[in-house]
Every structure is written in structure tokens, then in C-alpha cells.
Amino acid sequence: MVTAILYTVIALAVAIAIGAGILMISTKLGGGFMPKFLKAAITTIVQFIAAGVVSYILHMVLGTGGLSSLVSLVVIFLLYAAITNALLKKPDGGQMGMGRACLVTLIQIIIEIILGVILVFVFGAALFGTFAAMAG
Image (cartoon, rainbow, N blue to C red; front, side, top):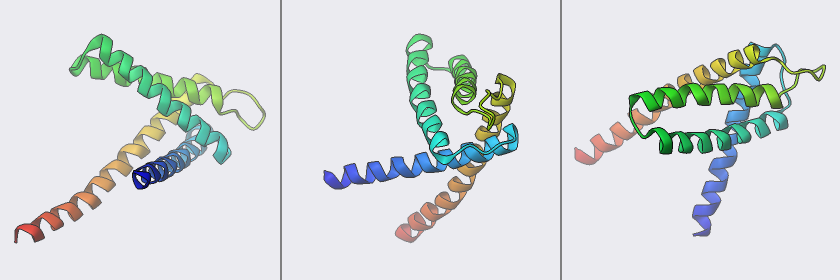
């Protein structure tokens, strides 16, 4: 039991660190500045929690299906942009603006998709090799 909790905590810490790194890179590319790691990590945690709550509420209200997924995607994209705009400040202390925050969020999502595809290919090939060895 303790091992499962420890693994969960480690996995969450690694996921937050990776998410903060992706947010830092996307802010550098889209916003023109690099936020501090702690600020990016806090923003990532807030985005994760808010997206989970909003996604749950939207699925309770709209149900499942194609249109509800599209609405959920748009709402969560705007939510991520609003949280990024509110929590990540420029070095001069001002907000980056909603347009820049949308650009940062778009870059963040593109990086996450590319990383996900790479991981699917790497771990998919490993799992396929394992299953082939077990069958053979």
C-alpha cells in the first residue's frame, strides 16, 4: 500500500516537472520570456485541477459524444489560456495578454501532442515486442 502511494507521488512529481518544463518552453517561444520553474509548476498544477473540474462538469451537463468533446476542448483551451495569462507575469510585472496566452497554450498543446506520439511509438514498440516474445 505504501509502495503504491509512493509511486503515485513520484509519478505526480515527475508529471508536474515535465508539465512545468513544457510550459516554460512554450512561454519562451510564444510569450518571449521564460518564467521561473516554481511559477510554471504552480500554473501547471492549477491548470490540471481546473481542467479536471471543468471537464467533469461539462461531461455531467453535456454527456458524452462528439459535440460535447469539441465544446470541452474549446472551453479547456480558453481556461488554460486564462490561467496562463493570470498566473504567468512578464518580467516587468504586467500580464502577457489573452492573445499571447492563447498562443502559449497552443504551443503547449502541440508540444504535448508531439511528446505523446513519440511516447506511444516508443512504449508501443516495447509492448509489441514483449507480447510477440510471450506468444512466440
